[in-house]
Image (cartoon, rainbow, N blue to C red; front, side):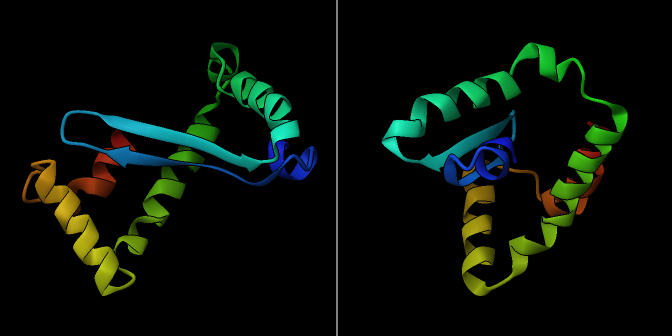
Length: 109
């Protein structure tokens, strides 16, 4: 929001989680011009700082978990998504009940 909407530095700025069997990763990215890259990067580094993370409230954490859970349905939007996700699950040796426990595991975070 800061990078794209408040500062107008990017065409897109977002994050998304990726889950593996043993760990998870969160990707953060922005699509910006070369001349605004430094400023966008500085803002992103500040957003991802320990100082900011330490100020995350329970409500913000709940909102983030709900956002991930609400995006669950998009794993099944079309045949390509279903196949792509199933291949990823298989490649990462995810448990057979992965999709059944996905939402409850997110809530446990």
